[in-house]
Image (cartoon, rainbow, N blue to C red):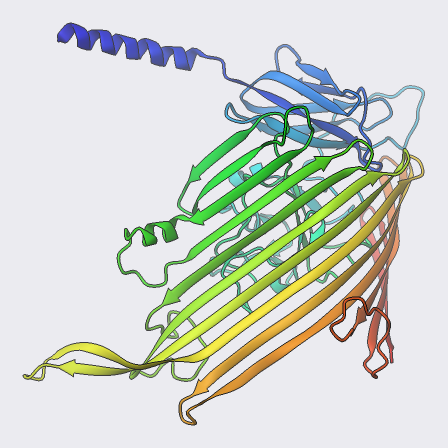
Length: 555
């Protein structure tokens, strides 16, 4: 028996030593495109800096590169191409469980010289939008794990940047230079969407739980000022969330279990040899899961949420690239015998001891869209996007009287709830339809122009009612169902006078249309309602921004 035990222990020691003696490697691959034209760069050099064997690769006809057997850890990539500005991509995390797939861009050099010496410089946090010169930076998913107090929530790490702060109540409100958090504009893949937080409220803009998930995000841009002409309706800041494309060569899956949520992520190609891919994620709150299993006891007010996100990419040979994306979630909680110390609810009976109030709250949000990108010639491309967004809030307050039950000796036994009724009902829904088209053209290395138009139809459906006990009837507090449309047009011009001096100028025009619920009725109304037209002009020169606005009220 002792001999068998010794043989088993020896086998385990040898097996474990073999595992730790393996050199863990992974594949790093991706695509390099021209920043302005979005065309692939053929023959661009990619070098893994800091490695002993100077591992490198060259992009093919599609702009793809591939580095195999890259040691796990943090690596830096150096990109160089004749006639383009060299750059370094720092702190790329390589692990053994998943391939690293990158989407990179290079900027054509504006200065031509007979002889030039190129030294790599790290442009950390450079925004994806080439029209943004100031007060804009890119945030990588890996940064959200390194910043203090991030909790894997990209919204929280923004407070580490200059000019941005958050509230002290633990929520992820984004306050940009003192502006209200409700003025921050959220975007998904470049298109405006709803606020990406669970447990929404008609007056709240932040929360303790965001639906953003690091497993799905690519580098996202955040703007705090000096906006390019494209952002003509922004008052505070812009958070443009980007989803990464799935692995288009092999299928991978990730399971995660944590304090915040339990999730599954699937990604991979649709079929072998096709460049398209899918990426799907689903997450359910761990606390809600434990509560449903009965492991938390009779705790009231457990926050339960679930969310999902996806992105599918469909490249074609001649018709461009189509992508389908979406992100949504649902959340709810219930409080029994809620008081103002726990949660502020509508009504005047919340503080009465003989009245018990139970509060049920549900919130939903959903954002989806389809995008088409096609190259028109060698220096132009066209982006067309159709999106749908919806957010909803349901509040139900149940009111009941409390009768104290005593025994025959007069000792208190328990409270009895009687005459339970719905005292307050609220249902707020805001579906929104959007369509946009942007044309980009690069004349040469110095001049680029963007022309775009965007149409939005906002639908507001609000219903609120309250039961008045004294009158013994229900009163309608809010019954609203109206649509409002906007049409915005902009032109941006970018001029690179040199490698260290860039001008961005343009114009943005917006019409707010009261269109009597018809999304196709874009003409000015003849019913006497005014149509608001706003005209804004921008000029940005590296560190100086000038903006002029003109508002015309036409009757």
